[in-house]
Length: 108
Image (cartoon, rainbow, N blue to C red):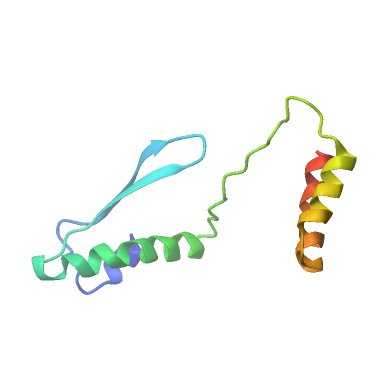
């Protein structure tokens, strides 16, 4: 809220409010309400995501990216898949990146 109060275009009365609107498995939805004169509403609207991100960063709150675990119904055929990766890749750099991903998947 301090970030909102610092902005010249946000009105002091009524005060800005921030609250958690919903909790889900991968996210927390925050609702931010701040009041501004009509001619500056777009400035507030466009700056709000940046202000929220800056406030979270200053508070040491990180936003993690969702992670998924992929399970295969049948085991992968390692030899055939490995040959396929090497054959389809034209670039050595791309082949090494693809192999890295391939082996990371196989380790899990």
